[in-house]
Image (cartoon, rainbow over all chains, first blue to last red; front, side):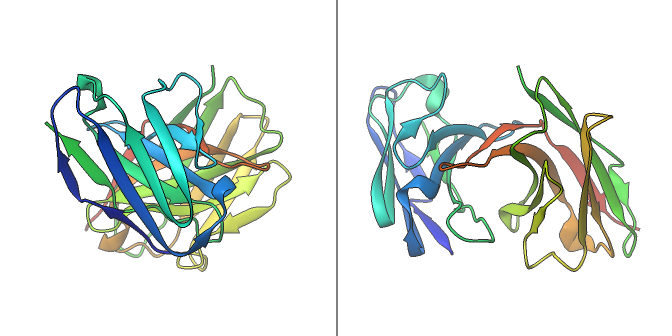
Length: 106
Length: 119
């Protein structure tokens, strides 16, 4: 199941709203879609699981939505620490695949 | 706090076997899949496979013929072997715990170990 993220790069300023898209080539169950944040030199960090559920310690400015083949990660108010690369990932069918990432830059 | 840490050689010769260990602290192995994921500039993040505490394995079909995973609960670690490596296997290799239930996710992750395939 190919996951395509758009845009490839999002140029925004602190305080702005970010909307990241993830489109699947086949339908994904909502319980099977996760989002991760990765900063340079670090491992990915779980943000959202089951499309809408924030992982422990993730601030409520991060939210996920979607169903079927279209999913969205929204960051309502960008903080300086949010500038990073974001990946969607599906567990609906093997092999479990990741999107190619969206870079959120200043 | 659950922590994972990868270890192994940073350089492997083409056609040889890549072997990595992931050491786990702060977690029981029970009821989780223990997974390997790699990241390369060319292919992004790629799930390699996982091993359940029961011993069941689940491998990426693209790598299945070359991958083997094992679990050693007495040593609190699990392992990855990837045979017949080529330069396409050069990547940062991460281990991660995968929740196995109604929901699933990879968390936490190790910090990653860089492996280069070169003669």
